[in-house]
Image 1 (cartoon, rainbow, N blue to C red):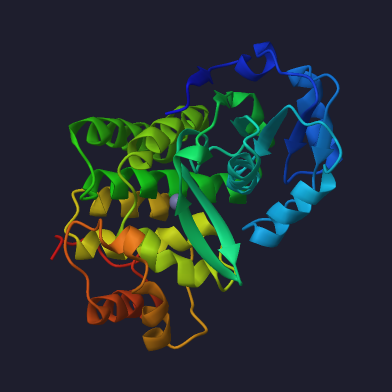
Image 2 (image 1 turned 90 degrees about the vertical axis):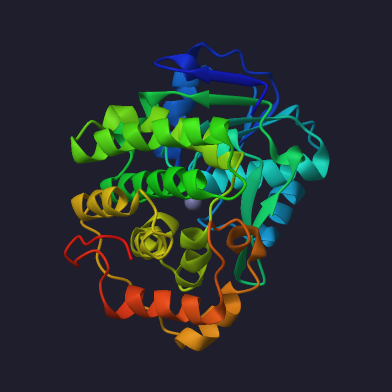
Length: 318
Ligand SMILES: [Zn+2]
């Protein structure tokens, strides 16, 4: 976990930021200028050309942008993409990083993971050097989040908590965090209490961040590679993976996705070819509670694209 975690209303406002920081964000000036005013930042630079699902070229571009400038700290302000770029830059340069999530889903501010694309393929990387020096979770940023982004983030957080619970790398402590995270996220989504999302996502980050996600995430990347947002692709992928794994979270996760009204997924590439992309993803598949072979993957993909797993009547896990 990050050495310093600050949580709650006004936590981003009260934090003492170092001068000469570089703020890295996906948002536009009309939004982040308001945020920076609230945070009371002094003498900073902003890099705002981060696009969703950042590639290694993006990281290199940011690095180039501050050549010759003395940067004391990176501040990742935004969704998972801003934070992932920040984490990778921190590792490359050794410059400290402060992570401030504004969409509350990935829990990335708590983890040693970063997702960066190499040659148009998303890669899940893990390194202790990705860990934030400080993480600030302030619900102040929540009201500005568009519904679609909030929905995808909420789904991601619930997928991470439940896959993290089932992960073979889990232990009683990670399961404690994952279980608590899922309970809070479920309450937030099913009973329309969005102000609970930041705390649930943060706990999910601590839980899955120390145990890893599994089959649901492994299946999802072929959809993200075709442009489906991460959280969206998890709605069907994690539902089908939970059924395959006989997870205790199968029905509850599906109910969350139904509540968020996700549509079924489509895949352009042939399923066999997609399975070949998924199989080498040992970082997720080796931690799945039960072994998965290529035929299992194809069957799961068939269920996802042909059966609309979110519409099926809730049944007992196989
Ligand atoms: Zn995720």
